[in-house]
Image (cartoon, rainbow over all chains, first blue to last red; front, side, top):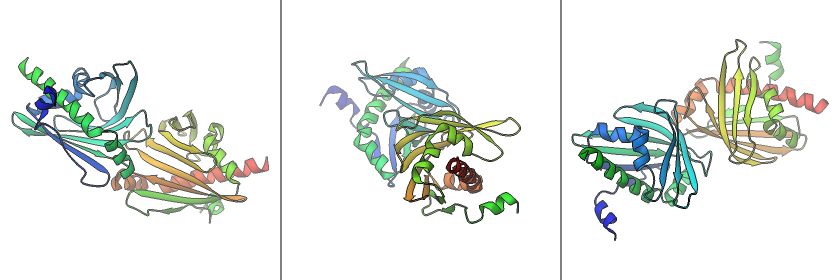
Length: 167
Length: 167
């Protein structure tokens, strides 16, 4: 177990599958809601936490409004790239974002992600619900390692929030 | 009842909602399967039948292969335009097409359309299954007049098939 892993103990997202087409992740952050919401909607901040520790995220497009599009490129250490894209369906600061999500490696498989931010005072509870068209697509996402990837990304978000709060 | 309506009697699609997230349309065409499949995959032919009688369809993009995109612009008689787009997930000539479908007027609401073509000799049975993320989106599509619009479009396809067979 590395030092990084130890640091995340007790801070893993709670992941459940309440229906046959959903994945729900819950995570509490040590930061006020407005700040957590900002890390989801400010392109410069998204680039700092979105994706894996070993990849660089390039925010190619991020039109944070209902109907706007987003596209994030993930550059691996070996220079290869892959990208994710979607459309914002709802942006309600500082409490709710609804957007579609599609990996360009499997085009046309589109899920709907609803992210809510609950105000716990100095802390914020984030609940992320991913809704798929079919159980097969949901299970494919889980088998692709979605949970560990998300936890790594949210750990980067924790670290970013700590930097933002102490700066 | 107009002459046009009389001409379509008995040739309306059978529309059902077998689950709470689906719309299934069935229609038989008086043309062999290869020809019907071609009208779905040839941009020049699509422009002739897709949409309503009162609109002009401009095929802006049509990359008929798995992962390719499509975008059709509908120009109304008054010059206003609206557009539809999606991604081909599967193209298996001459029997099956799977694609996403999204109206740009409601971006981020994406359905998956599976169209199968069954060989009945000189006739072809087309079955179109639309799968939505939610019942609300499915019902919204029905309330928007999807069934009558589709029937008008498939009537145009009937007329095109007749021209193609007699030419």
